[in-house]
Length: 525
Image 1: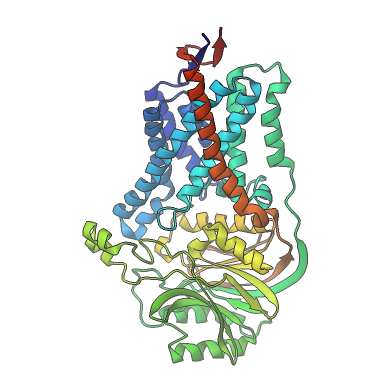
Image 2: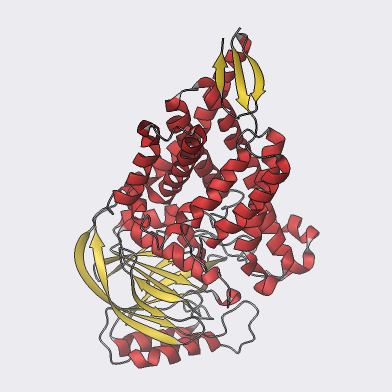
């Protein structure tokens, strides 16, 4: 009979819990405001170490601790106005998903060495499967429930690292996959302790070379667009006390220094107008006058009412024509801009849910404006974290992106810097410049390589007038991104299922399991 020995956990459960908690906290440091991007590898690596050899119950526990430590720190900005209940609710559901998603990772560490105990299985196949399963968990969390919350993706932590350019080939999901797979490959190389055999380092070395040496996909220069962008710093928070048109007036005041300047388009942030210009004739006249004085079209944003529904709407406003094109936010924020299943959540927390009075409807029109023959891709606030919105704009012919956001409810927190990092990743991923304008900051103009071209500090009123580079050409990330996600998501789960079936067949053929103290997987006759 063949005896296939299974490894003991690398860490006792009590130590794994402590390491998992440290891993979550360390992973958060890879994101803004700290932004020490190499710590993403440390956080991921420590998390994986806690799962090696772990049972299903143990994986659930350490995965829960890791998820809680990360999300309770990472999104603490939710408490700025809303207090601890929404913070614990959102962090809690994300933690549960992290916990459940830790089980497939632990099973991969258990099953792959049983089926493929040699070097190829341990040093290549296992790390690739671990990277795929981690990415699958991210993709699931970014799409469910409702529209999901893809806020803590590993790839998004690399906006200012030399690895960001890889996203132009494989997207943010592909970058996550390569980073986790490299980390897992290094762990397996260290576990084998065969440092004198250089061939054992080849899988990890190849993955590191892919991350470090592959250049960004080149997009083509298409000239420039002179963009005026204005951060009014008005009272645009949900709970800010304000008089009628206070936000509009703040935007107008911050725009005044641009009067008389030559520009191709003026950009205002999300919620830069506190009345509906499609219905309010006074607001419409104000925008007509501004477009006339600037001799340029405006891209503005307001809540609009159309066909009995409310939308978060970006509007292209042209002199003598008014609103010529509109785009509605694709993914309104659940529990922020609308309440899904309101009857249920009002029964749980009526006072808190009652604060959310406006119910935004998801938009279905394309995230794209044509401004005098120049294609402009759009994303309104949190839409920047959804791949499909960004990719659709590029496929429609965007030569530059303009992101409008309102961070007023999260003043003096990491939220606006985290969102700005996502905008920077989108510039690199698509090979396009991004103008990211906020009501209260931080606002920046970002080049296609991720460099900052212009900026406004948070908490001040101001403007930028920038010659923004235009680009054409579709990056592979945009072209094959959906296929990459399908392969990494469903493909990884299918591969894990195959390994599970093969392991079960080995058992039926008479294989027995015994643990080894040294933690190595061994087949004995």
